[in-house]
Each structure stands twice: as structure tokens, then as C-alpha cells.
Length: 69
Image (cartoon, rainbow, N blue to C red; front, side, top):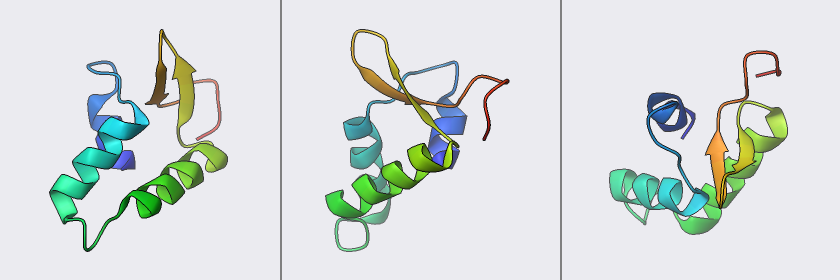
């Protein structure tokens, strides 16, 4: 997930649902379910590697250069 957020940084804003759908499409629902994706997003946000931004909707983005990763 972090690699996908990094890859899309500055090009496209990812919603949590978009990220979840992409992971399920890549790894299959048997290997990567919605609950697994929610937990992974929570870990990324809680660790500071990613942040939620609000730009007319909630998006997952990398923190600005001054914020911890």
C-alpha cells in the first residue's frame, strides 16, 4: 500500500476505497480482504508514514517533507 501511495504522490489523490480496491485486485480477495486493508491503512496513518488530507474528500497522501515518516 505504501508503495502505491508513493507511486501516486503528486500525480493522483487516492481515497481509502480506491486503495482497498487496488490491493484486492492485485492480490485477490482470498489474500487481501477489506478488513485487512482497513488495518493496513490504519497502521500507515498511525505510524505517520501516510496522512489523511481533505480536499473536497478524504485522501491518503504522504506527509509533507517537514512531517515525520
